[in-house]
Image 1: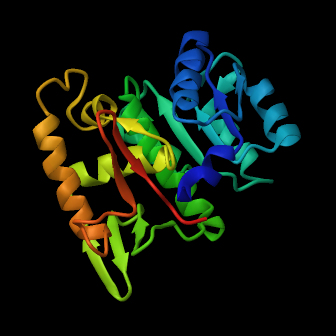
Image 2: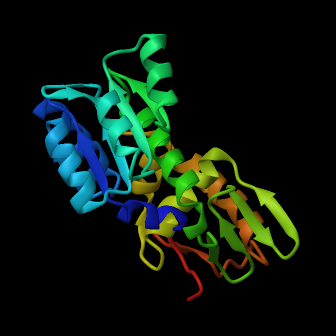
Length: 235
C-alpha cells in the first residue's frame, strides 16, 4: 500500500511520563509504526535526535530538565525534522509559541488515538511526499486507487462508497486468501456483525459492477461457497 513506507520512519517519543510513552508506543505499534524510541528528558531527547536521527518527533512541553519549546529552538539550529507537540498545555499562547518555533502541529492532551494517528500521518505524508509511490492495486479489468477511494478503468474513475472501500481494503490486505463472511461483516458493521450477510452480498454485487468486466462472471472478486470471498490481484 502507498503509506507502508511511512510506517518504516523512525519516530522519537519525548515525554517524562512513562505511562504516556507506553500508551503512545502501543497506539503506533498497533498501526504498524514499530520503529520508535523514547526519551524522558531534554538531555535524552537531544542525544537521540543527534545520534539516532529520527524522522518525526512527538514532543511534550513539560520535561524535568527543561521544556519542549527550548529544546525545539535548540534542535532547529541543526535539524528540520518534523515535530508534533503533545502537551497538556492547551492555551493559545502555548500553541502559537510551539508552531512559531517550527513545530508542524500541536495536539493537546488528552487526545483520541485516531486524531493522533491522523495528524501524525498527515505530517509524514507532507514531509516525505517525494517518496510516495503509485497506490494502484491491479486487477484483471481495472486498478484500485486506495488513496482516492476510486476504481480506475482506463481513463475513467469510479468512486467507491465508504463501505465498498472498507470491504476492498480487507480483501486487498488478504489478497489471494479467503476472507470469511464474518470478517468482512465485522470490518464494516463492527463487533456485532450478525444479520448483515444479505447487506454484504449487496455490497459485493455493487463492487463487482465497478471492478469486473462481466459482473455476472467475476474473475477478480471470487465467491468461495460457504466460506467467503477472495480477491485475485495481478503481480
